[in-house]
Image 1 (tube, rainbow, N blue to C red):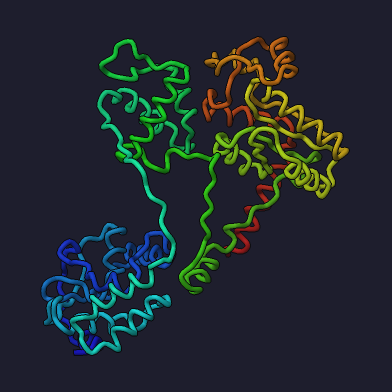
Image 2: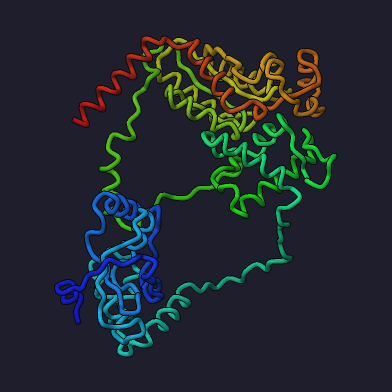
Length: 446
């Protein structure tokens, strides 16, 4: 029986998706549905709005012949009952694989899927198709490279004694959800507000602002993610960037996505009417999640220096300033209150003035000594000896104690940055630019 014949005379019933099973042969032939696939997301949206428009087709023993993607999309959409036609064969029938292939003739396919289909079409022994597909996949995936020998065994202790520490960390992570991904150090400083026990059976193991406590926390946060008590996306390591290319299975979903996102990538330059060019500089990647939303709100460029910034970001900033045609460059600086942190701001400003001959006006937004004292921040240790000249100047002015940006709550850091921006921009010009952007959106949307 052909797929057209089945579609023309279906016996359709409402079936629970939990009574329908994925065919192993389908997984060998076709790539599995991906939640982040734009076409899959569109199917989920359609099912939420319109329901399942085309019935699934399954064998008598409940194996899906047509509708693997629809079944997966229904689960994502929270739809658990689907229309389904049953055909008079079972999954071990000689015709099952051939029928599976027939129902997928019109779908978009990659080269590996086309090769797999060709094997189905050419095979005279239908019962051997699955075995041949597995052999072919193994052959295609083989590599002529000796693998590195994995030595030792990694085991993680079950979370028992560290439960109080993990529970408090989870509370903090939930409170700061708007600022995900967080760094371990941000959680560390929050714990110091009401220190828990590091170990429930050790009454004297109160969490402290020391390296030993921090190392215990890092270990507990790792185990918390592995046990899925902490979402993976809640904690990041911005110091070790990972690049994943935005690739597409074929051009159709890309083109559709471009139309769907029309005007969504448009950002008007809110600062173009301001008399001065404004930029933000942050010392470390761990505060990028704090800086970015504020910078986005005002459309102000920001640079993360990761310590002393190299010459390239400074040159790029100089070029942006020159293109702006503004009178003055205002640089808003956020860095640790320690010898290097203070010098980082000075070094950046000197370079913009002396290397690029720019009239620069640096503003230390955070962290200042006044802020550290007023917020009663826990010290991050004492000034290090590695740079005697920087250390001497720092100690003479601020004392031995140093303070880290992560010790300040994300909300307070954003408040400092917002207040600094509001103090130097013309609000009337800013509001006019926002109003003009809204008019532009309404014009194109209408």
